[in-house]
Length: 158
Ligand SMILES: [Cu+2]
Image (cartoon, rainbow, N blue to C red; front, side, top):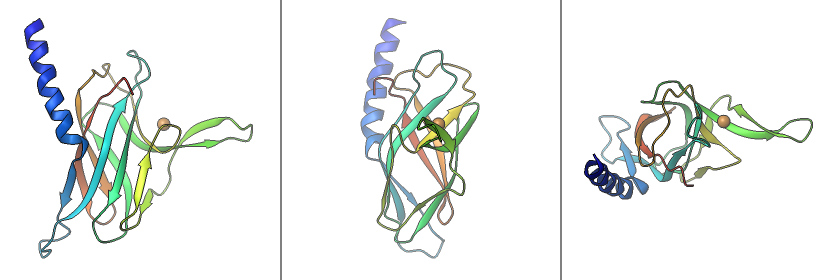
């Protein structure tokens, strides 16, 4: 059992290296000659405690599709829901999370950071604890290029 676990961690390590700078290519239409793409940099998913049923994912999204676009939705292979969330101050100056209405505009060549204390992908209703190095398939839905599949590794140490 122990050996199997060690082998698994090595595989996960290689997989991590592969996804850190993954560029996701999507065809805009069958007539397109070039691959439009969103670059996904340093994605990671974490929960604050092993017993949490919520988690948040962070990354940097770079629009290199050649056209303006808007991130309008997200789904994942995990049970439960995923939403676009952000933080803002309430009337008492307390930072609170809320769902982003209307998606996130990402103009051509722009970079959008999902980061701690700011915008993030919010996972709720998890049924099992996330495990370090687990690779979670996530689908980003853009207004123009449509669905983009990415892999987000779990990193509980970040
Ligand atoms: Cu949130």
